[in-house]
Length: 289
Image 1 (cartoon, helix red, strand yellow):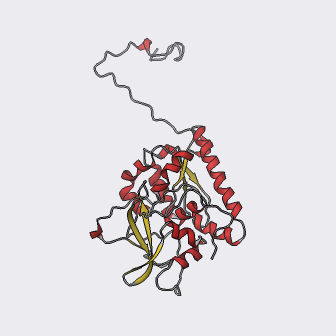
Image 2: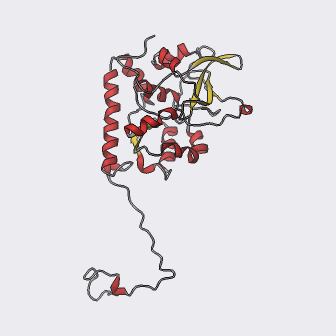
Image 3: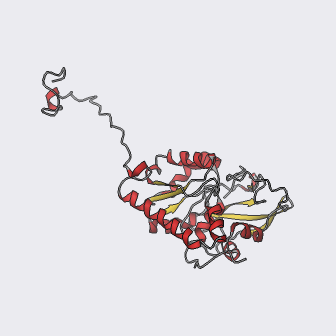
């Protein structure tokens, strides 16, 4: 199928080999019963379900493979130079566990998905930080720099190490999925001191559309692709303006509250009271005056 409408892929993807993974299931909010789902998964079925262009997926090295004698797709994770550093398998669209990591004996160490787009993110001044590979692929398809976090457990374990990849990017847009896992990931990300003041929460999901991928499928099927593109651009504008106004990751665009710095006089003589009390700031007759 042709899953791409009126879009020119110009900068995100190429034919380099690259790679991430975890054995932890990423439920992604899909509590659907798919009893008749075919065994295994192919790139063709994946492209059809996600409304992603098949040629595009092949260009980013999403390939047909097998895992434990079952059809699967192999998703490779690159480093910033585009060289494969990790990979994992997806064996189903909905049935858990959907994801399988390479064998422990491979020695491969997990990294975020999409490090090859970081240079572009620094040039543009923003980067999307979605959960999961398919939302990341969708954003690449639409020519947005994006680095995917493969699940809450992955960030819990590796987040303190991964924040270093996000240096030099002023605005980090996080599309929060409409479930407890999405909220938990947002909480973890916004608790990271190195990035929290650069995070911008994007609330585009709902009970009907749990993540960006669900919203994209609906937009694609209802001839609203340009509306979807516009919604993404609006969030980039809002996040960028919030950053410029000093209110990123704060309700109503207010700047973050600063914790007063405790000044120690250890090793120094304490100042006389009237040297550090502003004249007329304390009422006459007050105990400290």
